[in-house]
Length: 162
Image (cartoon, rainbow, N blue to C red; front, side):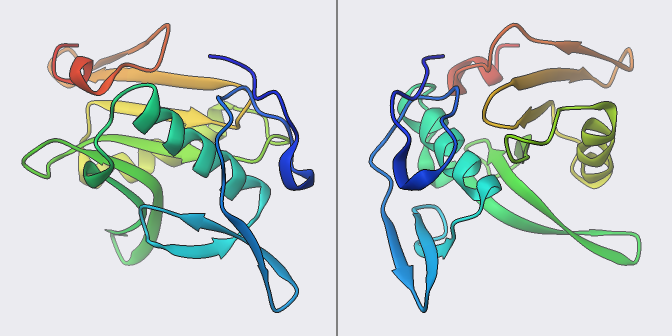
């Protein structure tokens, strides 16, 4: 991945390609346009990472924007949780869960435990975590029950091959 060469809107420079983010101010709060939700949302450090990573998936890894969803609500037992991003196949079956953290949050076992809890109900093949600086993706094999960390985020076409 390439480094973002600029620091836009006083946000952290990320280890993701830069893009022309639509940022505005509304009622004294900075907002960024989320093309998947088709609305402006609060510009937090985590949202900055999400918008860059989603742009990376679409522009660099050829993920169809129509098969990505941000802030997808799940029911786990008696609680409601939200997945940061879910990637679907062409039949709208979930393939990947992506969890974002702000740049100051290290990617730890606890972060993976969080995404694994979301996967209890979804049973996706890929789990991805990014804090904008470091990105991890693993493939889950439910037959052997094992997981393998991948060297790179797979392209959309590779999701069906791996």
